[in-house]
Each structure stands twice: as structure tokens, then as C-alpha cells.
Image (cartoon, rainbow, N blue to C red; front, side, top):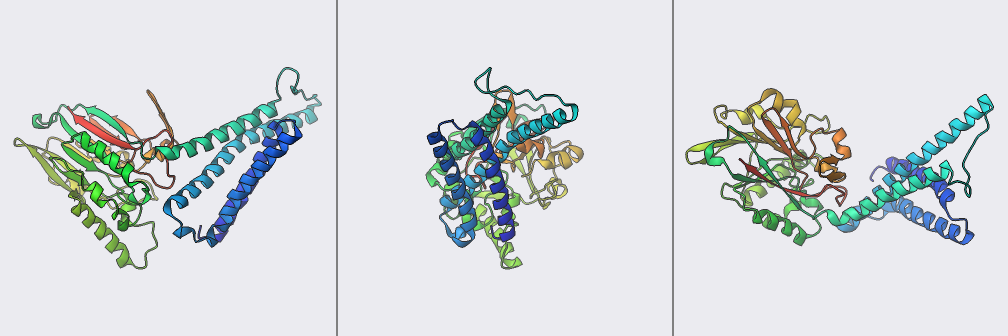
Length: 414
């Protein structure tokens, strides 16, 4: 919102969408003048509130608003924008249909036939207008309802079978969490309920695959003691995600950015978490061992950094029978892991959050993020290798979840 030109472009697009969708509202509005007037006033009152809020944000000290208010106002504006955009698709289909029909009738002198109201049904225009409004309203309602889902932690229990797993590690219970994003939290008690759920699983080891904060180490001040409660017999291990480096903040100096990252590392140490920075550890039981490899963020996507050095982290594990890799970004899987390191048995990742929006029912899952990340949520397999992408413990940007709930993963190695 700091760029006035960008703000005006958004306002202009939103106004165009508002006027365009209003054409559909006029089509479907009741014939009664009283009802029509009430609906029109309600429509434009809400539209004006959204547009005026956008225009006034630069002058209302938006950055210092209470975090909940700031996040919900932003989310509502985004919800209105995308619901109107989706509704416009159906209205545009009708406009194209009517335009094509008009053109054909003019060229070939064919009379236009349209079902009229009061005969056998409604016109195609009315039907498409209703469809546009219904779909747009459903999207808006879903996004608003999603606000209540952001702390509805779901526990996913997955059994993974490996023939090369050392006998001493059969039955190993791993809790995998990712993408805490402490800077987005607004309800300490709700976060604590999630931590209680993790501890109730009695894991042997807890693995966290990055994005502890949105940007700054100070975001953990209120939550450090809560996450310090996470303990397991074999320890708690972590890696860094793209947000942990502070790359999305304009720092006063390079030193300030470096200091932020160092303090974030120190916080993890104070919580009792072992941060793996392009390195590995051997987990031992009864004189048998498996390798846990942790790397810094490594992404195959151009907008995200490649700080990770898998060749460095992997070194020394060649003779270990079983290997687990912690790597924040699942694009790492196709780009390097399966191609160059076929003996890494299990990779754990996060990053996508399942876009915090989608559909998951038994046997089917969908989210817009799948068009960017082929591996975006759940378990994936290629030959003898497995990848699990956690849907994220926290949230960022949109303060909610629609269809894709925050996840605590319990992996049982058998």
C-alpha cells in the first residue's frame, strides 16, 4: 500500500468490477421497485466502504493498526476483489454469447431466439447472471467463514513402510510440523491448544521444516515459551524457510538483517531446538543409526532463494542405511533430490500451506497452488523415495483456512 500508483490501479480495477457485477445485479433483482432500490443501495454502500477504505489506508496509519484489525481488513478487501472477479467471468461469458449471437444474426440475417421470463423459464442472461452472483458470493462467504479455521489443527497420521529401515527404528513416531509464522498469530491460547495436541501424540522426535516467523525474530517473543514446551526423547530438529531470512523486509542496514537471522537462530537454541544448517546428525538406537539431513532453504522457483547446500549436508551419510531430509520447499524434490540423491528415503517439506484454500475429500484434493507446485500437500512417492508436504501449522496473508486446515503430521515408520 506504500505505492500510490499501484493503489490507484487496484482501486480502478475494483471499480470496474463493481460496475460490471452491478449489471448482473440489475438483471436478477426483483421487479418490485422497493426491493430493487434497497438492494441497489446495499450493494453500492458496501462497495463504497471497500473503495474508500482502500483510498484512505495511506492516510490512516495502517501499519500501526492493531494486528487483528489490519489482517481482517486486508482479507476482506481481497475477498471482495476475487469474488467480484470470479462473478465477472460468468457475466463476461454471457456478454460474449450475446455479442456472438448478435454478430451471427447480422451476418446471416437469422432471427435471434431467447427464452423469455414467464414462458418456459428464465433467459440465458438471467441464468448466467445468477450463476456469477452465486459463485462470487460463495467464494466471499467461504473466505469469511475460513477465518474461524485458522487454529483448527488437524492431526494426519501416516504409516510409511520401508524395507531398509533398521530394526531398532521400526515404529519410530515422527511429528512433522512446518510454517509456524508466529507473526500472524493473534490467539495465544489457540496456538497452545495445537502444542498440546502435538505432545499428546508422544512423538519420539519432532521435526520442523522452516518459516518460524514471517520476517522478524521479535515475532517469537510472545510464543517462545509455548514452543519451548515441544520436547521429545530423540530431540527437536529444525531448518530454515524462505521467510526466516528476512528477505521481504527493507532493513536499515545489511548488519541489521544479519543480526535478525542470528537472533532467530539463538531463539531456536533457547527453545531446545537443534537447527540444522546444511548439516546432518546420526540418530542412534541399539547401535543402529539413521541419518537426519537438514538444509537451508532451497527452491527451484525463481522468486525464492537457494541458500541450501545438499551436497554439504549429505556428506558423511553415504554409508548410512536410511536417510531423512528436511528441506522447506517441495520444489527441491523434483529439481535435485530424486535426480541426484536416490538414496534419500524420506523428504519432509512445507512452504505451500496448501495455499490455505482448496478442497479435500476422500480420494480427491485440489488447490490453485497445485498449478505451481506439483507436490503441494500430503504424501508423494517416486520409486523407493517418499516426500511428505505438511500443510502448515500457521498462516500468512489471509488469516484463515478454507478446505485446507492447519496440520500436525504424525509419521510412523514401519
